[in-house]
Image: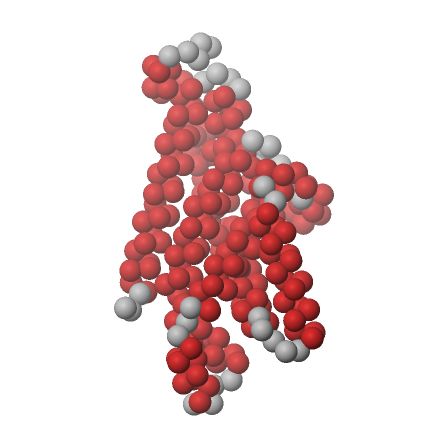
Length: 228
């Protein structure tokens, strides 16, 4: 197939729409599941970093160093390399190295540390006076977390997970290049490798629409959570 000329991008008769919608569903599934798991692990890691920062206890300081090292290492590895690096782990965890399910470990290991740093920053930005007031009223550690830290930082946490979700959409496209399914794989195999620009162009448009949708939902949630 001739892939020359701008007109080839608009030959939508060359698009298999059944495959396109199937790939769109796979991308949405990978994104939503990974966002939920990243939010959970990211909050836990961020909370651990926040609670262990500045401690005078040697064991707690050591824990902070270990968690920070884990977060910094996995934030530093390029995603495409991380996918390959974690193939044995993926095989062990999900029983396969291809398909949308196989992309989840890499997506989580790459995005959870990134979100953890945003969570830690959000917790540090909570007004110290609010925390002190809760402590003076007898709130224990868990009450401080659930009734003060998380509610007060919810707009920042929501904004952070929105940014992370958009990054994950891009990661799913990269994962598709090595067999993870979704729009990334369709654009690469049926589009680029088959010299079918219409498929690549259509997949790109759908990914952009998904990104806009996540951004809109995130902004909408932040506006309604921000009490300022």
